[in-house]
Length: 590
Image (cartoon, rainbow, N blue to C red; front, side, top):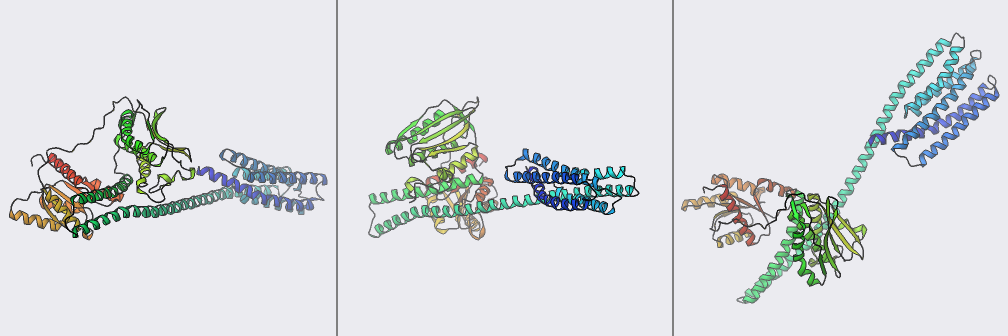
C-alpha cells in the first residue's frame, strides 16, 4: 500500500514537471529555428516545428486529463509509460535537430546545436527522474542521432565530441539515480508525515470524544448516584424524627426499612453495572464456552419476562429452537437478558419477539420489538454508557443506560458479532451471531451452591481505615458469633491479636481487608503482613469500592476473593462461608 502511494506521488510529480518542459520546448524551438534558418531547409524546419508543437499540445491535454481523472494502482503505471513515450518522442525530435545542426563547417550553428542539446539533456534530470525509464529513453533518443552523425562525418573533433557525449550521458544517468532516490525518500517522508498528521488528528478526535463521553458519564453517574443517596438520607432523617418522639411503631419501622432496602438495591444495581463494565475493560472476565441448548435458554428467558409482559400489556413471543450454540452460557444469557429487558423498556404497545435464524455454520439470535425505533445517526450512541435516547429526565425506572454498553463489551469478549437494525416508528432488531455447537453434548448449567460444612463461628481479622465502617462490620460479625480482631491498619490488628493471645487461644481463620487503607497502604499489603504475623497463609477477602480496571486486575491476579461495596449482610456471610470452606480444603489437617 505504501509503495503504491509513493509510485503514484512520483508519477504525479512527473506530470507536474511536464508543464515546464512544454514552456522550454516552445521558447528554445523558436530560437533554434531562427539560428538554423540559413543552414537548414525551411520546409524541414517547418515540419520539425509543427511536429514538436503538436506533441506539446498532446502532452498538455494528457496532463490535464491525468489530473482531472480518478487514478488507482492499476492505472498509474499506464499513465507513467504514456508520459515516458511522450519524452521519448520529444527526445527523437530534438535528436533530429542535432542531426540537422551538426555542421562543422558552420561553427556558430554547431556551437548553438551542441549548447542546446547539452542543456536539454541536463534539464531532463530534474524533470524526468521521477520515472527513470522516461529519462533514460529521452536522453538516448536525443544523443544517438547526433552521435551517429558525428561518426559519419570525417572531422578532427569527432572523437573528442563523442567522448564528451558519452561522458554527458554517464553523468546524467548517475545524477538520475541519485535524484530518483532523493525523490523517493522525500515522497516517503511526506507520506509518513501525512499519516502521522492523520493519526494525530484521529487521536485528537478520539481524545475529544472520550473527554465528552467522560463528562457525560460523570454527569449521569453523579445524578444516578445522588438520587438514591438523597432518598436514603431522607428516610434516615424520618427514622430519626420518629425515634425522638418515642418508640418507633413496628409497622412504620418495617415500612422505612423496606424502602431503605429498595433504595440501597437501586444504588447497588448502578454500582454493580459500573463494576461489570470495569471488569470487562480490565480483561479479568473469563470465557468458559460450552454447548448451549437454545431451547432451555429461551425457555428460561420466556419465564423470566412473562410477568413483565403481562404487566405492560405487551405480547411476548419466544420461538422455540432445537439448535445448540457454542458460547459461555452465563454470559450469553446475560447479553440476551439485557437485550430483552431493553426491548420491553421502550416498547409501549405491540410486543417483543425472541428467536433465531440459521446463517450457515452460525446462528443469529434476534430480539425484535415494536418500539419507537432508533434513527440511523444515533444507533452507534446507544451502546455508550449512560445514553438513553428516550429518557432525557433520567427516570431510573427506565434503567441506567448501561445495559447495552455491557452487551457491547460482552459480545466483543465472546467474539459474537452484535448487530442493530432499526427504523424510526417501525421498531428495532438487536441480534447476536453465535457459532453452532459441534457434536459435544451440551452441559446443563446448574446453579452454584455454597460449600457445605462451615457453620461454626470463626476467627476473623478485619482491617478497615474508616472508623464508621469498621465499627459497623465488627458489630455485624460479632452478632454472627465470630471472634473479631479489628483495627484501622495491619499494625493495629496485629496488636489486637497479640493481646488476645496473651489471654488465651486466638485462632485466625480469615482476613477481611479494605483495599484502600491509610498512608497509601493497600489491603493486599495488609494481608501479606498479617499472614507473616500468623506464620501461615489464611483465606482472605478484599473489600473495595474501586472499579478501576487496573486495580481489579491487580486484585484478581493475587487470587484473593473480592467483594465490592456496598455489601449486604447476606453477601458477606456467604463470602465468609465460601472462603473458610476453601481454606479447609487447602489445609485439611486444620
